[in-house]
Length: 230
Figure 1 (cartoon, rainbow, N blue to C red):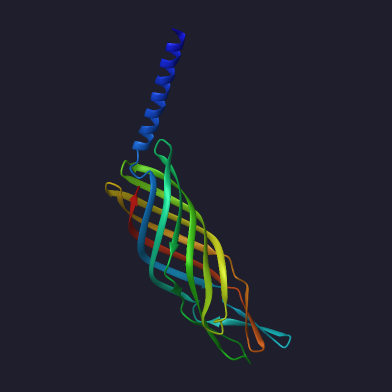
Figure 2: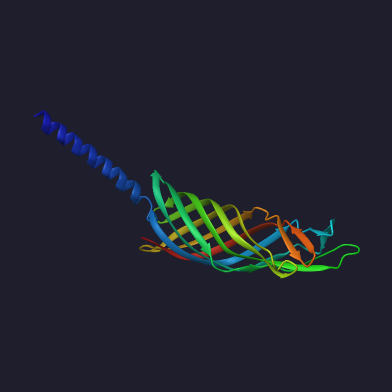
């Protein structure tokens, strides 16, 4: 009976396809949706902190003295995402994370002959990161991954003549990490991340003087944490 034979072959093909799909899914216990929280250490750096002071049609560049503003501090991140098996031991992930803690840099001073010294510092906050994450299943319970993403944050003047400054910055992020199943859907992870942001090219007005600031901002962190794969 041709119809019966065709039906049998179709059923066999579907069974094989389902079995292959199940095998691919079984290769990593970390495939699927997840939520996680991490804590660690972070350093934020700024560069190109010269200031152009303009008043009455005259402009002068004030160069910073000492080190550029930076800060090393406690960091934390909350993240959600998904990993989908693509081929053999390779998975592709998509995720988003948010860092609720702000980072305040050290202060710096700019001065020039005939000009009063100016002191100021920066604060970065509300950092978010949306990323793709290619991953390799080291074994069924371990996953090594990379991250390439789009990131944003708020940059504010934290003190001194920079206090009126408030800008949103965007840039790119890179990361490497590893996660390991602890029990069931619970897993632990460790990762390192780097963030680079566009320069704000902002103007700050104080009295009759306008100060043009154009700092570069970058940051890197190391995080450890726990998550749950649903």
